[in-house]
Image 1: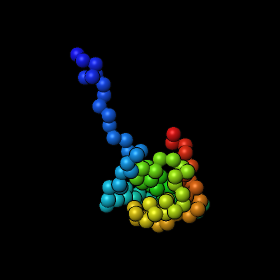
Image 2: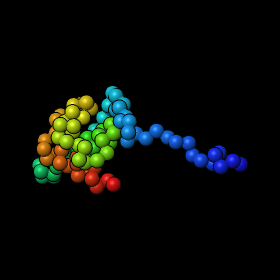
Image 3: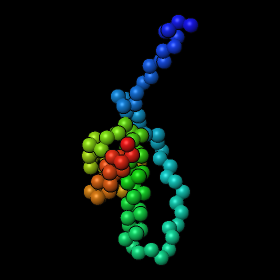
Image 4: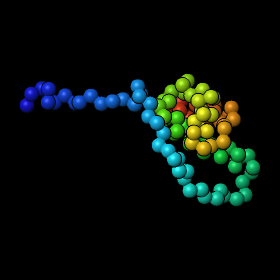
Length: 102
């Protein structure tokens, strides 16, 4: 078999070509949260869920590094997927999720 036949074919990397989000965005079916927790728990829980959704949407759109995800980028992605604009704290959490998934 010739050596040229053994070489893998080059593939197109999404790092150089951002992938557009698949729209419309279908949110996961919501389930009720467990009762009896302090209010702060519900706030932080919902903030973590929102940060995860935004981090996934950013990764899908080609933003792979936390320093590429400025607050404006995160907020425009939130508007694109139909989520309320995140606070500065949530934007910080999105960048932290992107940092620790490597």
